[in-house]
Image (cartoon, rainbow, N blue to C red; front, side):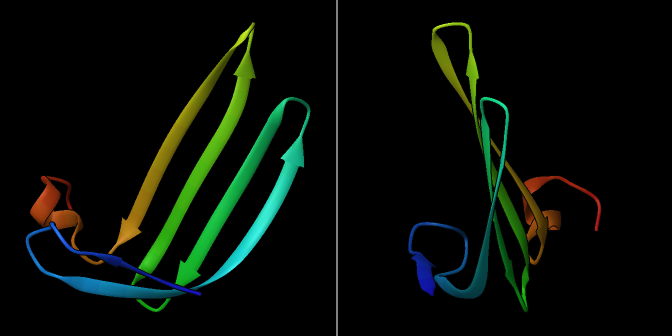
Length: 67
């Protein structure tokens, strides 16, 4: 799979392998590629939905995070 990030500091694409895992009231999508790992978690909290995302890889220093 591939997606593009057109309005970031750099216009870069990302090729990745998708892995999906499920736990009680939670779905975890992990996108693993040569530039890093993107993890998106969807979790039911009460009657609402909490979505969190975590990136480890290329571009972290540009977002104020240490390498």
